[in-house]
Image 1 (cartoon, rainbow, N blue to C red):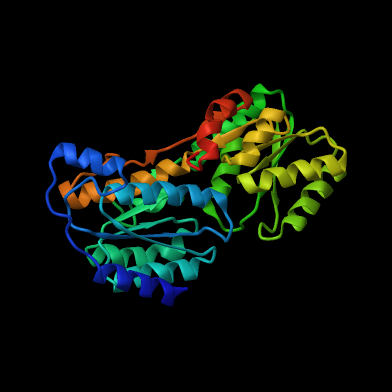
Image 2 (cartoon, one colour):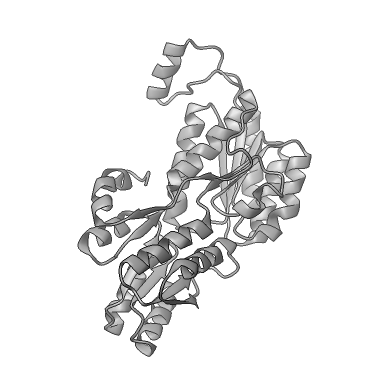
Length: 326
């Protein structure tokens, strides 16, 4: 994968050129037609994330990033791996190719610390996205874009309390992911009942279902299950049904399945962190920095969530969920 990224970056850089000047009205028309809406050089930005294969959340992040890149005349290159060392190698490849900006998620920040420092030392502006808000400034990034995971978790704990839940299980599907730990810790902090963590093997859905089912069968007093990603919500629903449990299933993040299950009542609520916005703003803010030395956030993360989504809100957002931007 590292060789693939290097090849793509090399080809992208070789094709860099300027779009030339456009009047304001011409820029608007160009944007509507899907052409660059700016006259800045064709810079190359690389995004490297900790996404696993088939993770629909990151498809939405990419969609936002690609649409901002098209508007801003950016060569956008994407690479991902759920292994932190491979993620670090992708960032190193981007540095070697002398890209004009790097966007990186810090799910396992210590593994990325040195390579992010290399990028900053090389004069490549870095924006962190989604994970690693606590380490972003320390590592030299311009800003962090995403939700504060602790705050998002606290919103979940508060919502569970409002719903009268007494005993909850927080399902962590990626061990070592600091953002996941922060979500569960935040929920536990504000939840008026009791909450415990359940670690599962996120790359094996049958195993995830079996673990949740076993927990519910062993402890019938559990009345809430919280999953940390949309793909795990329907699996938790299946586990609940197989266990004969009446526990409410709630989740972080949205997708088509979650929207349907919210509307049907199979899920209680979801926490939306607006992944499209994370990708779009990351590219747009890098462009603004390259073009005008603009930085948003004032030294603090630029928050894109959390938003509690229930059946009513899911119906309102359905159009955007279907098109893959929520």
